[in-house]
Image (cartoon, rainbow, N blue to C red):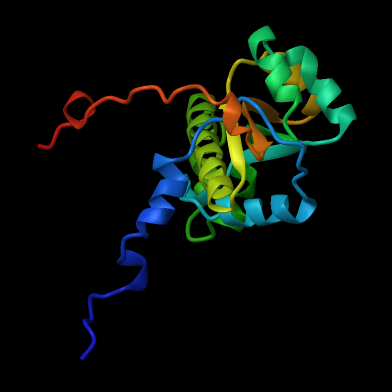
Length: 204
């Protein structure tokens, strides 16, 4: 008789999947001359949109800067140390946060009047928008890795310039950016160390 507590999603992922998502995955600094198609970007969104956010608020709004014109708009906002490698990426995902995300809560979280939790509460709006769009940006990175797309996330940007170039006249503000494509292994740095369990965690 099947175990009534068994669920296929409670089974650990294979070692190969864990390697692809975490242990072997790297933040890339150089890129192969290989395009990322519209279909791949759509598949990427269809994965990362499923990650959890507070009350399903989903504040992230993303611009996939792929054309030369879009990259030229972004270039002045890049720090000098990040400019060349970012401009060489096939796609740069600009992860923004909609500061009016709560207006979509009747659609996204119909179980309660979640919109009323945020209206007129700017500190709460700021906190939720930043935290949840950051989570969604992390889901984007993991979804890209799952699809075989390499990533290069960074926050070394002038957010005000990005806002002006891509989100002017809207209620979206920039959080961070993430290059997408197929990385050049020859341009990787050595992996930086990580904290041990005891340095970063405790069990109570």
